[in-house]
Image 1 (cartoon, rainbow, N blue to C red):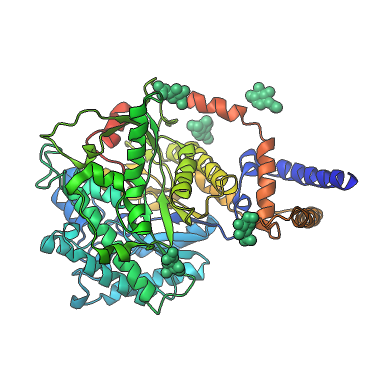
Image 2 (cartoon, helix red, strand yellow):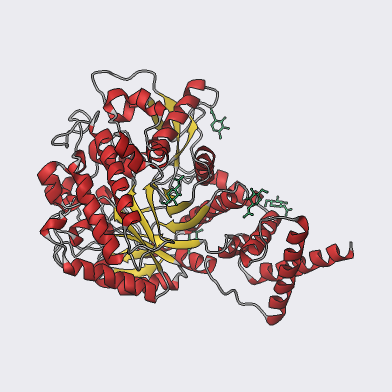
Length: 591
Ligand SMILES: *[C@@H]1O[C@H](CO)[C@@H](O)[C@H](O)[C@H]1NC(C)=O
Ligand SMILES: *[C@@H]1O[C@H](CO)[C@@H](O)[C@H](O)[C@H]1NC(C)=O
Ligand SMILES: *[C@@H]1O[C@H](CO)[C@@H](O)[C@H](O)[C@H]1NC(C)=O
Ligand SMILES: *[C@@H]1O[C@H](CO)[C@@H](O)[C@H](O)[C@H]1NC(C)=O
Ligand SMILES: *[C@@H]1O[C@H](CO)[C@@H](O)[C@H](O)[C@H]1NC(C)=O
């Protein structure tokens, strides 16, 4: 009894010091609430960041071609300069370090490494040098590199020659490209991802036509020069999956890759709830919608084939895998990368016009942002455009855990944008309270998924370090923790979220020697307790210790005020016109 009282006293005194020494937000949750070795990073991609588009031997990518040939389809903007990461990466790595980040996710531009797209035509030495220098600089600064092989920017030459991802030929060219990457960088890079968001790429490039290569049926979008929205998205995804499997095969064969290196695919699920929670049809539609986000890719990379539900609904439009391909795909992802941003209500679509077939309606559902009783899916900031649905992240992670036997997951992107219509001052944009709240809410749900639900999530990367070129939206939508001043030499400015994240990630919380001693004592007590309870959830290390303290702190926090704020947010006037522009029926979501 006495011992228990003493422990309680220790914890309370330790907590009260923490509570008085830190601002409200960070005592709720911080780095130390997460498991040991949990990785925090920022994410970026080559085309959106590098610029130097015709420097250093790089050839044009599909996005160079798309943005220069149809500027009206990319907000009259291109990424010739982007945020000039190619020249400024050293300074930008200082920003990552200043944020206390552990890792950086970036992609290798296929067109910079292998300009013709084909290894037989030669590897560009300058490209190899650039990525080596970038990786070395990251490592020298204690930032772990995480490399994406495909972030939507293959050489236009392959598009011209055989239609890019519409052709099976791309699979072998991608295999060769990935092999060069493993040879050149495999000794220094332990974290690899193959294909970024295959679904967004397939739909935006081949169903809606909003993103490069901008193909679709004429009736879907009159700007499309050619395409078939009913068939091509399936074909593109099929080849993306095979390209993924080919790269993983090379990865596992390579003698440059160490035992503890990992490779995986990156998906971008939204979470769904039924439009009418009393409608069985809408509930079924939710299942189909989730299967399209996740199972379409997870079933092949885990079990080696498409899900039955999808085969049934898509019929002969869905290609099939040969026995050999199926074998190559099975167990081809060491982890699942997840880019999570938002959620939607889903309504069953009872009728689809047979004269207007398209991928989007094959599964007979529609997205909505409000439900049948006009409830908005999540709070929308006056100035933002992404509906914040943090519980959706936890639910998505549980879906994966339950359906696929709890695979290792990394959150490879999560973040929120600010719509810059040119009327806001820099100071206004730097004050990104809404972003801090978005990040915090998502990190809290992630924490619950790990600690309370047992989801095996090992890392979290936020999109993005800097404002950057956001595809068809150009530079108007700002996702950065750092603001980029496009009018003045691309100067970087810290938004308020930088200071918040920096503190969240602080490894060395300043404390007096007395406090440290108490902390040690509490640790010892925890260890003893864990041994007695025979728990194998080891409390031996600071990971578990911080975790348990984290939940106590969480319980002590008064959440009522937060909830009030939350409901207020829902009553904000929604900029429907802007929403329609970005999420309407003619566009698709993807970053
Ligand atoms: C709409 O969402 C709200 C909030 O989750 C819920 O209370 C309500 O029942 C939903 N309405 C329908 C028709 O599903
Ligand atoms: C899956 O692949 C990994 C990496 O090659 C291997 O270690 C593991 O044993 C495989 N698992 C199964 C079930 O085949
Ligand atoms: C920053 O924005 C928040 C919320 O929009 C507002 O309450 C606050 O006053 C702003 N801070 C400054 C310094 O303008
Ligand atoms: C922990 O315990 C569970 C159930 O008692 C067991 O299945 C699991 O293998 C144990 N894990 C370790 C690392 O000992
Ligand atoms: C929590 O905050 C709410 C709203 O501000 C307040 O009404 C309530 O009394 C608080 N509860 C406690 C236990 O402090």
